[in-house]
Image (tube, rainbow, N blue to C red; front, side, top):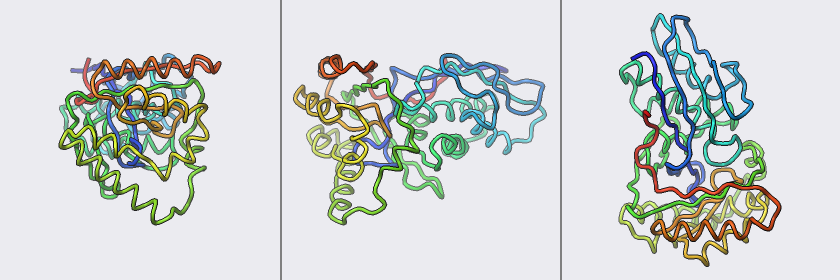
Length: 306
């Protein structure tokens, strides 16, 4: 096999209480990429559709992660990458992670899968760092592993797969404004109160337990962020209005997707998730801000061949 086309999914990171460690994978939106072997050595980006991104390998997230993997190989050929970008950069649903994951996953498939998913994440993290100015895997891990994942540590990299309740659905609204990850990190406090830290890790532990036991009531009670959301929510127009409205509509909880501006909610069943979608539309339709909304079951497969 000399060419492969893949779907690299969008993801939601942090999931309220899990800043920089927790994430889950979506299946209704993602990038498509074509990876092919070429006689010319090295990594070459030959096509980018939908968004103006750099073709220079060292300046493109997909290229940087691919180079990290390529440097670990001993081959006498190279790879070409085509990127069909459907996740808007700066949207808060893992745009850079999808690019970073897609290139290394596709290369690995063409090579007969010499690397496992954790090793692929280690390569992809180099590309993600280009976008966010730091190495973190909370978007990368769910894109590669599927479902919910928890990053136990980055050095050494250890990723835990967490089960997803069968009837759990996500609704995501993406206001058409851009918030760069590096900028949203700059607004965060350097220190937090011990009482807030205790509340946060109690919520995270409870959420992980609730996912393992499919305890929807506990999921709802755990989707609370007392450390990051109070600061980042100020960057997102009408965040509090959306959050309160979707809770009133029956959502289990809501929060900032990644670094924003997207807002996620989790619901029991597709019917409620669609009701939440209508509620989000009603809030944002009067703001003058363009937006997209996606309803998605939790994607337990992750990146895949199409």
